[in-house]
Image 1: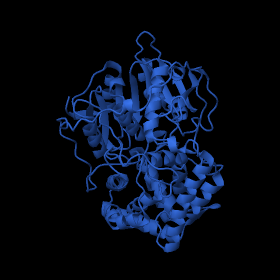
Image 2: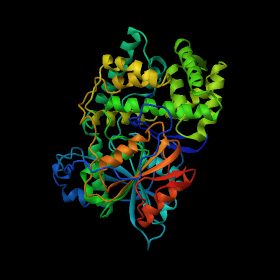
Image 3: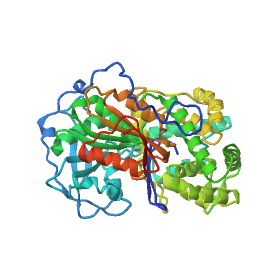
Image 4: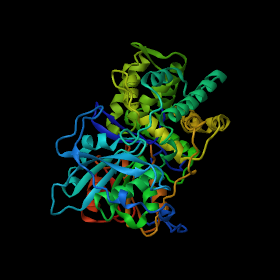
Length: 528
């Protein structure tokens, strides 16, 4: 398990929650204060990198998708008859556009109002590694109003499921690692096993997906998006990115600022944070959300946190038996984390904690399985495989075990529950990865782009609010338009009526809100 930018569906509540990763630069665990209502100062403008890749040949830009009835997904409901699927060819290596190609899978539901149609609206639901072909039909009701005037389009990014999806392990190997590897190693033997597991995972990716592995970067996917835009016949790219999808949106805006149409980034990844910065921000963000949960149940946050930390220490020594499986400390951390993605899940956290303290790990293990995409037959999705492949292709940083251990005292002070795990995660995630990463942090400056809505939620655990401030600043003055949602959870559209109305007005009518507009409990608090 890794608390990174993820997209998951909690079937019990029907709540759609996206992703995990980064966060802000704050050091406290209280709810972040909204930004000022003045735009950030203009940073030094950086030239777009759009021209650094050769032009695409007409054989690619002139493709016409063959839209057909969609096949049944591996899991979840079959898309309705109004959905159609197609495949677009993209260069494996955008530096060699006349070379080998790979498929990118698309799904589309055409706009209902043909006369008022604006164009295509592409979605990325996060991860990285989330399948838009699977998720968009399941989530489409949430975007029904947008579907009046947009063709709703989802896709599997390169390295994901139908788009040359990366596979690194089989189900048995994944289950064995999940059950045996300590995510917060305490001994030399546990450390060695933890690092060996990371290396083994990477070696499995290289064996099974070696051809595509060096080319799963967000930069390459952003270039794929621009090709998809052309193939769909749109002059501009209209885009809705959630969680990791905000990072993809920022990279696209930097590469192709003149092609930016109406863009929404919700639950925003901090583009300025490196590996350690992301881990630190998330440690703060998840503890912030945990404190808010504890306050909501009438508990003192410090005492409640220590109670949970005590339970985790006990599970580290003596996992709870659940049928033929065990609830380990790592799986319990996973189960706790997933409930913090939305306030509607908090009652499940209360139930899971009470049961675990009473000796039953069933509910907590069920929560962990939802996050880990494990079904009741023991089959796992490959989202975590794609997630790691994309993350490690993006990041050039490879922190060592010694560097991770040096972070533990600070991170434990920030969060006795999540700190040690997130400190170790900096070294375990991309250690001994078989391909080099692209850069330490992505580039998101987009001078000349149209206004982009950047929506941050003050209680977001996975992509803490401060990341939205950083993204708005990086995009540049007049481009990044910050919208603050005072509330809990990962992602605001569909949960805040105020944010939803603001986004709808922007996407459907082109109404750009004032920088710093603040929503709280469905109402506007400041801004215009």
